[in-house]
Figure 1 (cartoon, rainbow, N blue to C red):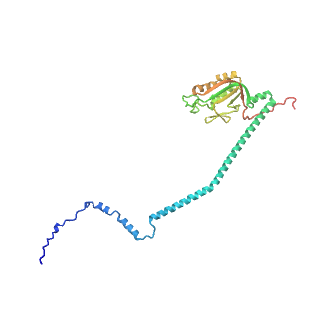
Figure 2: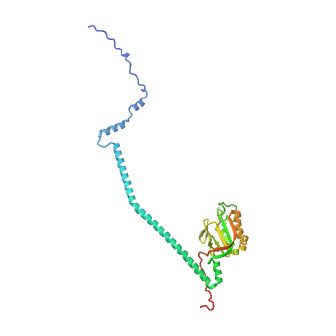
Figure 3: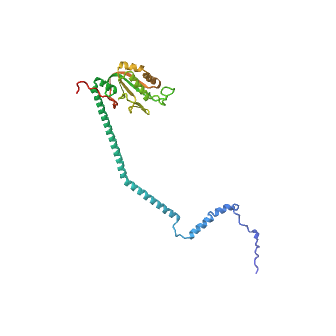
Length: 302
């Protein structure tokens, strides 16, 4: 049987498979084709082979979080319940403390009133004792000692701080004490004013209603002026009973009066001086008798 001749197989004519465009980037293609590291893949396969007896990790985390929230809620609820139970007790203790403070304040006020009453009683007894044996001389001694109120003509001196405050400079007489505000009247200034009034012939002196005696103390506490430990507030009203025609000029011509004038000119301290026909000065609030002698009995007295 004659068959048709087959064309010879030409292997050389078969075309090779086309090369990959990224054949030159073998490392990059390996990373792209194998995104999961072999170690991670083996660990994942091992966990799957162990079975599914336990719950998934994500569910465990959720249950743990839920348990923590429940525990925190229980703690907060318990704390709120305890605070609510303790609130009435704390409120009661707070009210008891307030009541104790108020009672102590009331007691202190009562004691202050008793002290003022006793001082008034002692002063009255002292005035009575001074009047009985000495007659007119006793009245004069009581007046000069501040045991009785004073009334008569005299001068009224009103002293006030400078408008605003200013820092001193220039080595004036007020620089030595270290005060930076030289526009304020100081205790030593008031001492000079009062001493000048006494030396000028004043028979009785008061500052803002505080009667001065030979034992009165004028001191400072910070920027405040104290008279017998009682603070004064500017303006300072100084009343002096005496000869109104002579007392004013004598004070202005004295060294202390000139000192006050220097304070006005150099530091802005303000003051006004005027004569008065009728001044009323109270008795000293507290007067202590340090020495006493028995009066001689008059003849014929039982």
